[in-house]
Length: 367
Image 1 (cartoon, one colour):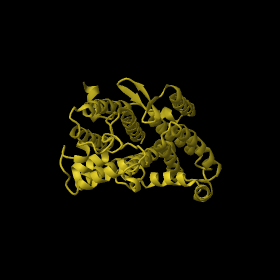
Image 2: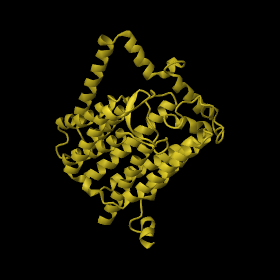
Image 3: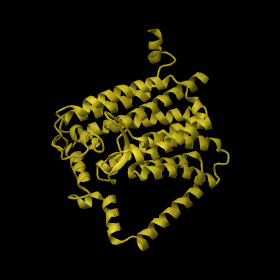
Image 4: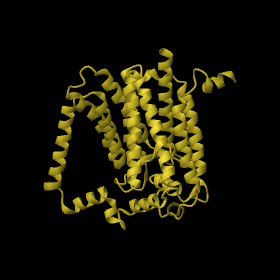
């Protein structure tokens, strides 16, 4: 009993400043799911996944994760991740045109969730070993190849949103790693010139039309932009105080598609309004701030870069998800961390928080 209590109050206690905002965000998602379905199917299953994920957080908190610094371990993890992504093309479950999941009956696993974290670990190791010569242009190319392999396999599923996340994480970690901004600017310039050349001289009119609809879905609210249009109605109808729990007409009447995953932010905003949404974003800000604070306490560059990479990952997910729910960004099927329905991403997110909590505890013990 005493050893059990130490996990919560002693030297092995977790980082509660990480746990509390993430847990409240999960509860917000759970309450929202319960309010727009009569059979409570999503509520019950998500409750189980939250229980499992939180348990994983506490277990991960007491593990010494310093073995992740080893090159052999990271290379093995990267190899396993690529193998799983390749295996999807033969054994993956096809849903809504994408072959992104391994289905095991009641449980489905999406390897791209794991791939994002493994990519962060690999880039953290790569940049931490080369902090002295990091300004060399070749490190942009080599690190970009690592990310490109993962992003390419995710894109081919096809999961465009997941591929964008992997690329954005790489770009963010390049920015914080100390790589020469001149070289990075050159890469951006080449990318922009290439995109403009394709637009002006290569793409046909119908291809341009598809891209415009993707970038600005509200331009076709009866076709490709229907989902985005319904989500903007849901967000706007919440006004200041919201319609109340269970009173969201867009979600409850199922005008709002994928209300438990891709558009849970809109469903929450409709019921809780501007005040509730502001509180949700404050929780997200508190979580990200704590992760960045942990980065400043990292004992080595590896822990620092890993924490920053996780912060970048969560920021990208939150910004893209909220942006597409408000009609500001293309609809790409990005989940809201800790809030959207699903066990695969929830387990990985809580596992990562457990790793960060353990790293912080180890650094405090060492000091």
